[in-house]
Length: 224
Image (cartoon, rainbow, N blue to C red):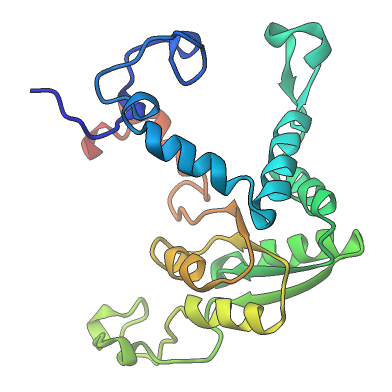
């Protein structure tokens, strides 16, 4: 029995054959481009709203600017910029002057570098560490055995407060740097300004989670 739940990740067709990219293209039975046509139109309407129109336009222009050699044809294009440079470019495209940086204690050294980078380009940066507020983990109902350092006072990560601090500073755009799984979710839930992610937490791979994805059929096969 074929599921009707959209699953683009399992689409069996080559990229250029897919209906989402080519008029008259091919599609599986659970293709959302076909089966969710009403939502396609709803989303198109959202892009016409003032708060979305320019943001979406500049995001597409940023995608364009991430490639070089476009004039030579698609087969010749190559990546042109690392993500931190693309982030700076997008901030410039949107005319933002004040940005927020929500980072993890474990990436405090990286946060210093990132803050200096954006500040050196004339931006005002408000940065907030995950441990802000010094709230004990016991307030989450955790016990001593639930701590990283057993037998000591341990401050909980506080992504809600991180978001609230940046909200209070009226940041125009926020950058997440290394927040834990779940903590990043809460930050995104409470942040008022648009957000992007510069790096995610992966303690094993040096914050490169795709390393495990690329090796799921070999070194990390035990995860499957």
